[in-house]
Image 1 (cartoon, rainbow, N blue to C red):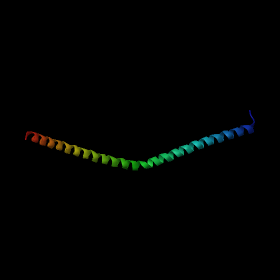
Image 2 (cartoon, rainbow, N blue to C red; image 1 turned 120 degrees about the horizontal axis):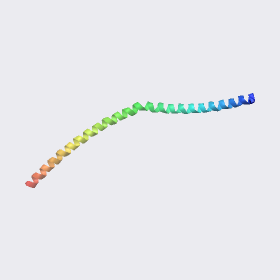
Image 3 (cartoon, rainbow, N blue to C red; image 1 turned 30 degrees about the vertical axis):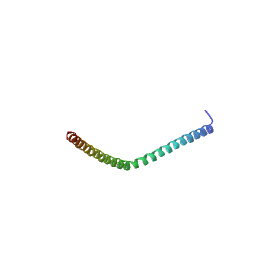
Image 4 (cartoon, rainbow, N blue to C red; image 1 turned 60 degrees about the horizontal axis):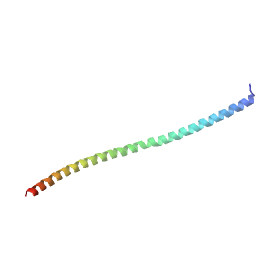
Length: 88
């Protein structure tokens, strides 16, 4: 067996190294948790923005449908006028 004092000092150094590693890992984990907490706090705002964007897109789709309908009607009227002018 080894020297008791030497064994105690070695165990103390190992314990200190393990404690430093655990402390470092815990610090990293806490930093990660803080970042996750920050991101989670933003979710309601992002959800509101997405809801607003979705509603805006519905309005844009409706406007495009109406515009396309107007263009088809205008095209039909122009075609009718061209036909009438050609046969006049």
